[in-house]
Each structure stands twice: as C-alpha cells, then as structure tokens.
View 1 (tube, rainbow, N blue to C red):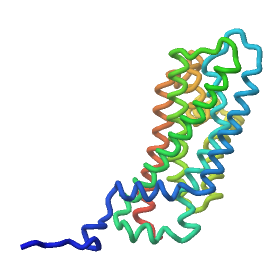
View 2 (view 1 turned 180 degrees about the vertical axis):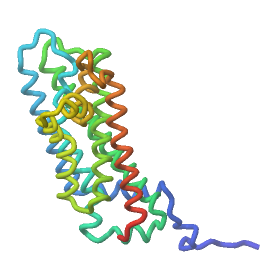
View 3 (view 1 turned 90 degrees about the vertical axis):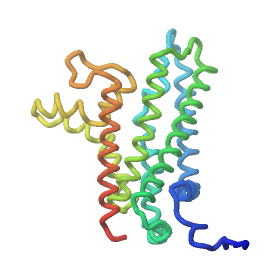
Length: 255
C-alpha cells in the first residue's frame, strides 16, 4: 500500500535551527543594514587611502586596524537593528509563534548577526589592506599584523552580537545603540574619577582598553592585562555575559 505525505503536513514545516537561521539572514537583508555596511566600507576605504598617502618608511602592518573603535558604530547599528526592528514593526510575535522555542530563535538571530558582522569585518579588512598595499610603499603583512587582524574580526563580531543581545534587553533601537556606544567608547571617563582603583584597575578592564591591547599588543609592563589574547578573551567574556542576560530576559518576558 502506497502512502503520500502532504507538503502541508506537520513535519514538513517543523521549525529547525537551520530554517530559523535562514530566516534571520533574510531579515538582515534590509536597506538599513545594506546602507550601514556600504557607508562603513566607503568611510573605511577613504580613511585608509588618506593613511596610505603618509610618508612612513617602515609602516606598521597593524595600521590597518588601529582605528578599530571608530568602526564599532556600524556594527552596533547592525546588531541593534537586527533585534529591535522586530519589536518596532511588531513582528517579534510572529517570530515567536513560528518557532515556539525561544532559545533556538534567539540563537538563530545571534548566529545571523555573527555571520553578517564577521563578513563585514573581513570585507573592511580586505578593502583596507588592498588600499594600503597599492598606495603605501613598503607595506607588508607579518605575524603581528595577522594577530591584529584576527583580533579585529573577533572584536567587531563580538560587538555586533552584544548589540543584538542589548536590543533584546531594552527593545529600543535608540536605547540599544546609546548603551553600546557608551559601553564601548565612553567608559574611558572612569579615568577622571580621582581614585586609584578606577584610574589604575577599572580603566584597564573597560572595552576600549582591552580592544587596544588586543589590537596593538602593547601594554605597560605592570599592566593588569598585558597579553593580547587575555584582553581579547575578557572582551569576548563581556559579550557572552550580555548574550546570557539577553537570553534569560527574552525567554521569561512577554513579547
């Protein structure tokens, strides 16, 4: 006896992580994300072209990524919009209904942001290196440069993912972007607090300081965090903590 299964059967369209991930990648293919990425690439390319015109006899290969903090804004926007746009357009309910397992849909969203952020960071890096190689005499990539480039990709990806988690937490595009900009770029203000604990200890653990150590590999001899890999691990640890908080909030809070 031959049996047939309708394409509308329950198992035919059961939610899976792969399908959720494909859906989230499609959602990120929006004009906001496209324009943000294009502006980031164009601005970074212009900056690298201006840098390449400088007369450096032995240019440091890390020059391509030392301005990493100025690029964080684009990844913050992409990550925040990925989450908050669904709240703004009231489509988060549809997402939750299509996949009732919130941890899976949350993981798919962050995985999509990870992919887009990683691809964008690699594209930015490729554009910068191409311009420097063509325009700057004596520019060569060495081992230190490769470590800095890897750290750059990890930092940008982590910032995009943390921004998405923050979007789940505050449900506001402006709020998520403002918090992330303050977290990444404005915590340096703790150095103004006239206490040694803030000026000498806390100041070394803020994201901007960790990012600089991870990219440049330079830190004072008596620094609390002197290893680039340790700095990168702590930075990623902040992202993991934010992801966990976002997951708990998304899982327990009404949409």
